[in-house]
Amino acid sequence: MSGFEIAGAEPAPGGRFGAGGEFGGQYVAETLMPAIAELEAAWRVARVDPAFLAEYHALLTDYVGRPSRLTLAGRLSAEVGARVYLKREDLNHTGAHKINNCIGQALLARRMGKRRLIAETGAGQHGVATATVAALFGMPCDVYMGAEDVARQALNVFRMRLLGARVIPVESGSRTLKDAMNEAMRDWVTNVGDTFYLIGSVAGPHPYPWMVRELQSVIGREVGPQLEAAEGRGPDALIACVGGGSNAAGLFAPFVADPRVRLFGVEAAGDGVGTGRHAATLSAGRIGVLHGSKSYVLTHERGDEVGQIAEAHSISAGLDYPGVGPEHAAWKADGRVTYVARTDADALAALQRLARAEGILCALETAHAVAALDEVVATVGQGSIVVIGLSGRGDKDMHSVAKALGVAL
Ligand SMILES: *Cc1c(COP(=O)(O)O)cnc(C)c1O
Image (cartoon, rainbow, N blue to C red):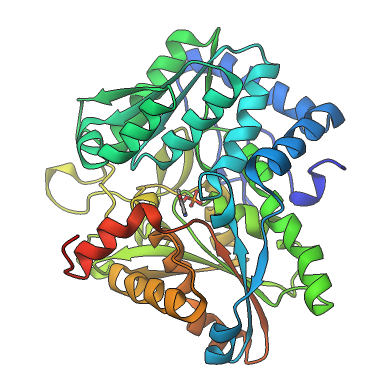
């Protein structure tokens, strides 16, 4: 297995993305600089070390179940007049793409001699994936979660605890994800000697956005040969949902340098971008700093909190993040990726459409990508080959879907 170098360009020094190096960086307390420097140095060595890559790929095969399938969506293809393929991250162990990244970071933690994992989680999906790899590697694991989220996501809290992790409710601020992020950073500063902070998306200070994109790029690197075998050529377009942006970045990365491939990222428009209740950070946010890097963020536009980070809203808990990875900000700026947004109602309709056409119940996050299919086919043309990143399965969302459809379970 070769290195990750085909997965995309390395950011400029200091983790800068974009022509002017405007996005990314390391906006952290002085006390954390040694920790992120140590992490970057370890990552630079590991990413091209055949022993690390062999271990990583062995676990992706034997534990996660990779390569994930590329399924031709036959009935959906006929409906839209294109060759539509689904990249099936829903078939991974734990039911989504997040495990790809967690396995890689846990391996790196062990290699660096860190004995303890910490993470923060909003809805709990990244917390569950982290607790899973902590159990696999026999490492103690603390997951910070806003007290509000702990109450809302009882099932994922239970899962993490069954897996042996400690879930720490955060009572400060709005008692949600951004407060949990602050607590996790505080823990890391205090315990840098033995603790590894496992970030779940292409966000956070350098080197996280780069490292997570490369670890998730296995998604896109599998698509090329799979499509070559099925169609004898590469894709015309790729579609993926964007929360923090990791499944999209992983799918897109190997194709970014190929101008023949159109790339579409789909954000969550919640109740509608005009309502203020959404998570469409790139579509409707502003440039700012969150979680240690510069990118687009959602801020309050009115009242005495103007400029402060606002809460995101989406029916899909995994897209409910008021920031987005800095590389996506750069791809937006140079026009390489087209970003659109879909509402809760669009996602619900797309989830049902995919279920009935293909027998696949996808996650609500994923349904946002499916909801953009008609627009993408209209843009790239009938007869095109379109790959949708099927980031996760829908089991976790059945209560939300039933509630939104007015069905009592
Ligand atoms: C967490 C999650 C997402 C959003 O995260 P990204 O970093 O944007 O990929 C999307 N889909 C599923 C199924 C998720 O669990």
